[in-house]
Image 1 (tube, rainbow, N blue to C red):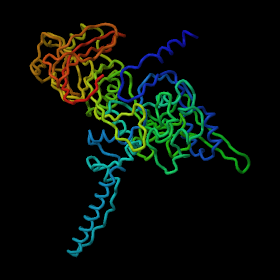
Image 2 (cartoon, rainbow, N blue to C red; image 1 turned 90 degrees about the vertical axis):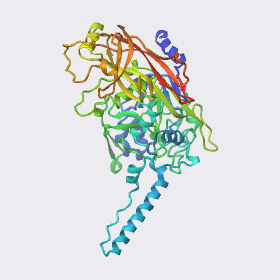
Image 3 (cartoon, rainbow, N blue to C red; image 1 turned 180 degrees about the horizontal axis):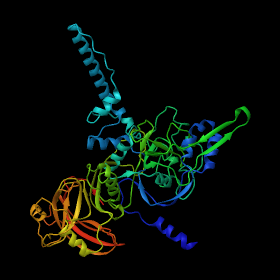
Image 4 (cartoon, rainbow, N blue to C red; image 1 turned 135 degrees about the horizontal axis):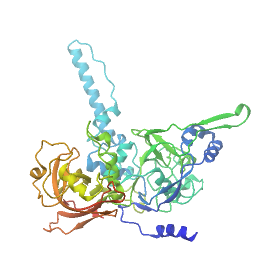
Length: 548
C-alpha cells in the first residue's frame, strides 16, 4: 500500500511549474466523472419537477473514472472586465447586451430612413414601400464588430455571458489559455472524492452558491460572492452562477444506457423515459446556473448546447496545461491544421504534438477595477496581452534514419519536421505573426532524380540565398510558399524532452530577444528520431510582459 500511495503523495507535494498569471494549480489524479443511474433516480424521485430533465440527466451517466493530468484553472468564471480587455485589444464583437446603445441608435436611424422613404413615395404619388421591421439581433450580427460597447461599473465583476462557444474559445486563445474539459471541472470540484459540490454535500444553497434558491432577482452574482462555496484550491463558483463552456463534444460516456422508471401508484403513476440526445456537433456546458436549483448544479450534470448558443446564464472559465506551448499546439491542430481549414484540394497537414512542443511565452496584466464592496479573490487577474513563440513537432517525420532524411531533403525537397508559431514579429528569420511549416534541408547540392515532382520554381538556394554548406530549416507558409532559411543542427536518437530559452542577443538591443529551440520530432522508427536545434530573434517592444 505504501508503494502505491508514495508516488501520489510526492505528486501532490511537488511544486507546480510556472503558470499563467492568476490561475490556480489543480493536482491531477483518478477522478470520478459523471453520475450513477441511482443518483439520477434519486434526483427525479425526490423532486418531480426535475423529471422534465430526465434525458439530460441520464446523459451524465454512468459514473466512471478518468485519469486527469494536473492543470491550471481560473479561480473565477471569466468576468466582464476580463472579457472587455480582450475586446479592446482585438476589436472583436462585444456581447449583444453590451451594445444596447449602438443598437438603439441603429433602430432610430432605421425608423428615420423608413419614414423618409414613405414621405418621398407620397410626394411623388407612388405606393408607399412596405416597412421592414428592425431586427436588433440581425443588426448586431452584421454590425456588432466595431460598434462599440458600454460596461457599467457594477457589471465589471459579473461573469461575462451571451458568448457562444467559438467566441469563448477565441478569448481563451487570445489570453494564452484554453477552455477546461469537463473532466477537469470534475477534478476541481471532487478531487479524489465523490462529493457532489466543491464544499461537500451540504444542501444549504444560500451559504455556498448562486442558484435558483437565492438568485430571486433572476441574474448572476459578481464572481466569488460565495466564499464558503469555493474549492480547496480557492476556485469559486464551480457550482451555480452561470453554466461554463467546456472543450468537450456532447457524446456519450462509455457504457451509457437509456433508462425508464415508474413513479407513484394508481392514477398518480408516472412513467419517465430518459434518453439523452447526444450530438457530437454540440459542446458540453457544466456547473449549472442561477436559473437552476442546487440539485441540478452538482458535479456530473452536463448540458449539450449548439456552438452558436448564447444565453444570459452561460459563460466560461479557462484552464491551461502545465507545459508551455502545449495548448498552442492543440489549438493549431483544431484550427490552422484542421482539414476543414485547408484550401480545397490541398493535401492534409500532419498534426502537431502538444506533449513535445517547446515554447517561450508571457503575459501582460492590468489592474482590476472592481465593483465597490466586492472582495477580490486570491489570484484574480485581468490579462491584457499574451505573447508566444513556439515550435511544435509534427506527429511523424516520414523517414527511419538520418541518412534517408538528408537524402530525401536534397532529392525530393525539404522534409517537414514541425511548425513554428509566433504571436510577435520575428526579425531573424523575417516573419510576421502566424503559423509556419518548418522543414529540414541538409547541407549540400540539390540532387536530381528523386521521386518527388519536378517544380517549375527556381531552386530554394537561389530564392532564399542561403549557404548550402550548412544544414538549414526552410520555413514555408501553410500553403507551401518558401519564406526563409534558418541555420540548424540535427542529431538522431531516442525520444527526449526539448527546451526553448532566451539567449544573449549579440547586438544587445533591448527591443529584441533571441530564443534557442531544441526539439525532438517522432519518426517512423519507434522512439527514435531527429533532435533539431535552431535560433530565432523576436521583437519585444511591448513593456510589462512577464515571460516564463
